[in-house]
Image (cartoon, rainbow, N blue to C red; front, top):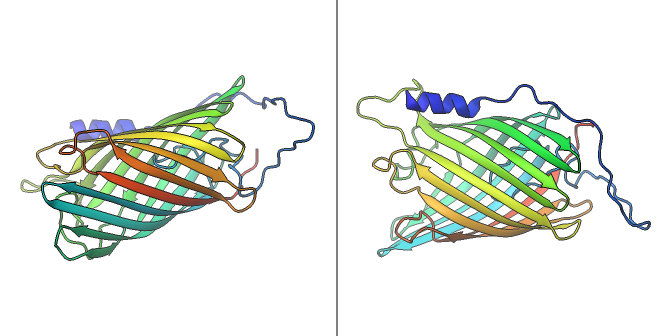
Length: 292
């Protein structure tokens, strides 16, 4: 019962938010003119895209990610490499659909390297931005469904024969060069019957992420992101708990898209954190398909 209450709370999306109309114009120099292009931050959200956490703002984008992490503990060594591409299409200023596909390479100590495709997934997002004087607020939510992981072996961290359901909610705040975005996520495994059996228990976790950032210049933004994941049951899910710090930077070009890079540093003790270190490189190209 507790699981279904949590699931309903997380997918409850606000349906009515008062939006203050109009825009606040700040002072600029006489020699500088700001022009919105397809590769700039999309005008439908006005929020910069986080590097690590799942954004609740609405975009139309194509994003390519290259991700690496490893872990060494008590003579065991894990290494994971992933390349994926994700897409998002905003069919209104407040609603979008998402999907992604990737290739993963995982190795554990002396075992044979496993190469698999990521789970195919599809999602729906809602995000609303409104003005409050010189600042802006964002509230959003989403639901993403993941297929089974084909041709993968059973591991302590996941069961490839089960589906995944991942609802999330979040908020954002923007004032001048400073922005912050948050995400609260809940994920559970499930089967085609959406019900656990007497001999099968689903892995579930909660995850909270926060992404403060500051625009050093119109093109360069600095991020200091944090993510914390807590398994719903540590007896079932023993290898996924973490608390990580992700310092990073993003650089938005005028017409060629946005490039970003972030590092991963663990905060929990080595025996408690699922990852020791990591790095993530992303490229994003934004499209402006909506109009203010």
